[in-house]
View 1 (tube, helix red, strand yellow):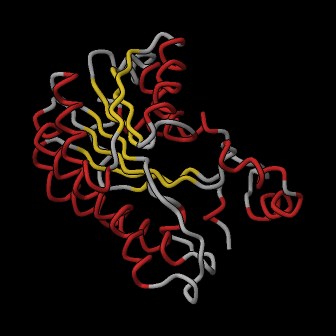
View 2: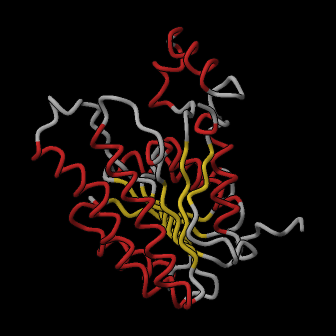
View 3: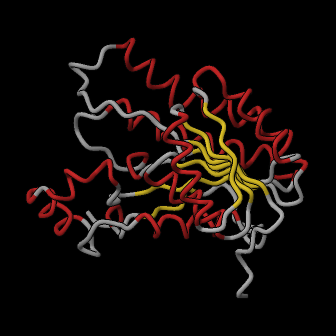
Length: 252
């Protein structure tokens, strides 16, 4: 069982991989032996992320592009680099925390385009490669916001709810090919993007009250979840959204 998560000889795309949770998942996949193609919009930050992984002994390539318009090109480039594709981890997302009164319909539609429609386009382009793989894995990064909503965040909640629903739909449609389609729903994680919140005493009180483990998650604790779903031995796990939130969504 010690080699249950060995990904040697497999290739993976990770979107949103220049920092934070996306980079953490990319590092985990590379550490397990996969060849990883990193994607984000900013080439300079991708190069920095790639150097981190190479310093850890991983094999990595970078493809900088905007998924809103170039999802299909990313898949083509990554498949050419790696000679195919076994794993797709889609972690890229955009959040707009404006409440309904401030978030106009055009901006709401833009969030759907970037967070949900682009996810569909990316998955649709990758499916021919993933269904040919011996143990194809499609993994979306959703959120606990797909299940529990906070006031004033309608765009993000709708997008992540749609992404979890898309996960189920694709899992049912493509299960006969051997491809598994799952999602991960992170809770509160101490990433650099959340540094100000982590340091906020009011937020600290919220975490202690709402998260049974009484702390923020460490990004490495999400990386283990993606390794589990990506592993060839996780071949009967299909159509789920795996919640990784310290128990936050389990309590009333």
